[in-house]
Structure formats: C-alpha cells, structure tokens
Image 1 (cartoon, rainbow, N blue to C red):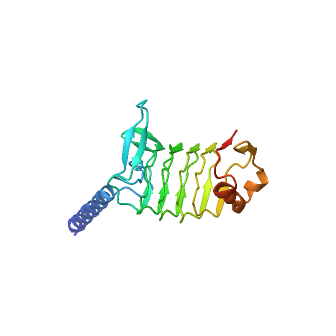
Image 2: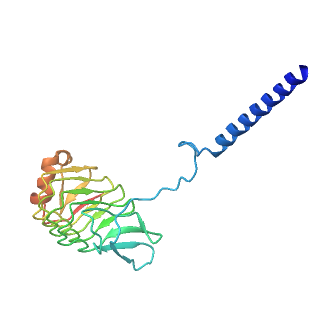
Amino acid sequence: MKKGRIGYVAVAALCLGLTVLSACGKDAEKPPKQNDKTSESQVEIASEGLSYELSASGEYYILTGIGTCKDVDVIVPSAYNGAPVKEIGVSAFEQCQQLTSITLGANVTKIGGMAFFRCNALTSVQMNDSLQRLEDGAFWGCKALKELSLPSSLTFIGAQAFFQCGVTSVVFGACDGWTAGNVAVDRSALNDPKTAAEYLSDNFLGVEWKRG
C-alpha cells in the first residue's frame, strides 16, 4: 500500500514539474511589452518625389520643385541624402495647382523669390522656428491663403511677398524692431493680426521688411 502511495506521489510531482516548465517556456516566448525599448529610431514623415539640387557649397540641399510628388499636402523633409534641406528655391512651386498646404522641414531657413507664385489652392503654410527669410514675391497671387503665422526667427520679408495674396490675418512671432523700407513699423500695429495683414499686403507691400 505504501509503495502505491509513493508511486502516486512521484507521478504527481513529475506532472507538476512538467506543467511549471511548460508555463516558463510560454513566458519565454512572449513578445516584448509595448513599453520595452527595442528600436527607437524614428522615421521622419515627409513627401516623396520632390526635386532637389545641391548648394554651391555642397553643404545643403535646395528644394527646386514638385518633381513627381503627387501630394496635395506637401511636407518638406529636414534632410535629403544625409544633408539638410535649407532652402525652398526660386519659383519652386510656381503655379502648382495641386498644392493645398506646405509644411516646412526643421532646417529650412529661406523661401526663395516667387516660390509659391500663383499657387491658387494653397490655404495653409506651416513655417518652422528656423526660417529667416521670405524673398520677393514669395506668396504672390496665393488668393486662397487667408491666415499666416510668422516665426520669431524671421528677419527679412521681400518686396511684394504677399502681392495679390488673400491674407487677412498675420500673426508675428516677434513684433519689435521691424522696418518697412525706411519706416519703423509700430509694434502695436503688428500685434493686431488684421492690421499686420494689411501692412504686408497693401500699406507696405512694395518695400523690403527687415528686423534687427
């Protein structure tokens, strides 16, 4: 009788051991939890097919056109082929009727002359905190563009940058220190988005704006 009990206990212990081992095996095969740090490399979301050319210095790229890109909401990358994209070239998106919005990459410092000339469908421009210059006629004829925010990094706005443009509200990130031609622009005027838009698109349209 004792032998039977001993045998029974031995078999039960063996089964329990196999169950534990099986459970441990399952835990080992579980995928890592969502908060586990595996690969944290982030992929930048940007439009593909845009055209670029290398700057004369070979240090950065200039976006020169829409290329084969079919996006209506264009996102400019911060870099291309390992080098920063620092400029939107002259007439880069001239009369690009598909374009409804543009988001600048983090490294863009300049929007070239006539860059968005008569982009009739353009309604939104998301600038970055690195942008320094808007060249002459940059948004000439963008009649659907109603609102715009200019970053505090901006120090130059070319003549007729907003000629025949539909802007009715412009928010300046920095209102101090602006001159339009030879006239010092009143800070309080630029604090009002409606007045700022009138100054840029009418009152002081034909002169260069500078700050600092």
